Image (cartoon, rainbow over all chains, first blue to last red; front, top):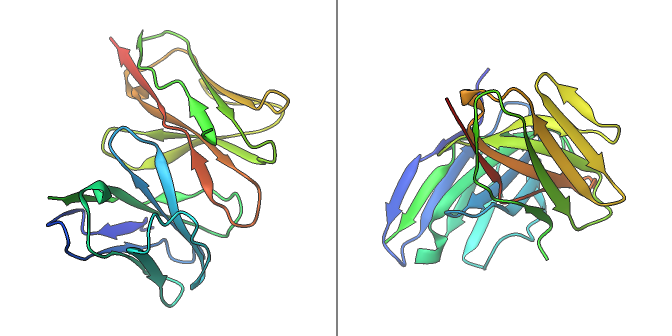
Amino acid sequence: GAGVSQSPSNKVTEKGKDVELRCDPISGHTALYWYRQSLGQGLEFLIYFQGNSAPDKSGLPSDRFSAERTGGSVSTLTIQRTQQEDSAVYLCASSLGGGPSEQYFGPGTRLTVT
Amino acid sequence: RKEVEQDPGPFNVPEGATVAFNCTYSNSASQSFFWYRQDCRKEPKLLMSVYSSGNEDGRFTAQLNRASQYISLLIRDSKLSDSATYLCVVNRGSTLGRLYFGRGTQLTVWP
């Protein structure tokens, strides 16, 4: 079956612009996670959705970052007024439920802020 | 202190070698443990879960020492295709499911 998909695969934007990143999880997966990976760094948790609600937003680095999930499926991560330090690969993962289920990752969106 | 610490390597070994990676975690409440593999410019993929009694999957053996908060991965008879970054991953066992990742250990297997 189809895995987690993300779009766009690459995004180059100018500092100060807003960007939207999209994640389409595996059908039937109720849990959805956003992580980011900066060059040479480990994966950094951003936010977790269970259904449409986000019980854990603790990883969002600033109020410029927000995310939503509608219909218990697709999620968008929005970064407002992008900064150069936002440059990273943004990875989305989904799992059947919350808790320690296996998380399946999408291919990521590589964001470059110039 | 980071939640999960790993030696970043790189480890460069010949085909057929045995190589071991170690990782420590800081939160004693951690409940679930995993090794993920990440190929260059690709997404992470689950390699294996780590169970308290230790577990084996083919050439891969994982061990957990809760008292020392230490996890290991042993790869026997290394193949060229094992070249990747190996991520030590921990879950605190709550219902929230957030994973904590180490920075990864880079392995290159040469012919």
